Image (cartoon, rainbow, N blue to C red):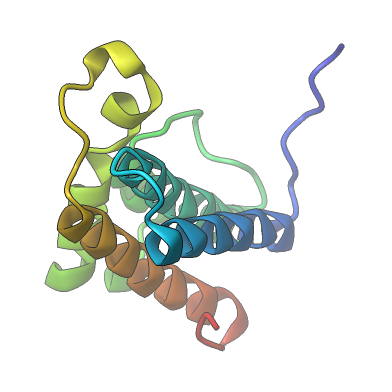
Amino acid sequence: MAQKPNSLIPKEWIEHAEVDIRTAKRGVRDREDPRDTWSVCLCSHQIIEKALKAIYLEKNGALPERTHDLEKLADYADLPQLKEPEIAAAISGLNEFFVPMKYPKSLSEPPSWEVAVKAFDDAKRVFGLVKKLIYGTAAG
């Protein structure tokens, strides 16, 4: 099956990030298994990755270089709001989750619920900012 090219419509990237928000929210709410923290943290990373690609796309009309590195994506977007200390720290913290959460051999113990909830809160904060920058409204 041939892979479809990535969307060049910022709204579609935002909508996919909103699916990740709902998934992470269910994980935090349900807490069925301590290992679910991995999924919450990975979804939190994905929320921001998709949001940063959307803002870059909105600004430049094309997708950035292919990467999962949130700090690089924030740099590519080149917006002062993403460099504010609280936002930059949230992006940096979330950046640590992609490889360890996606590839099981790199994992040891699952993150605590405290870490997972903080990651999700940080993701929602950054997502809200990006959504406001694109649409002029905050995330719901």
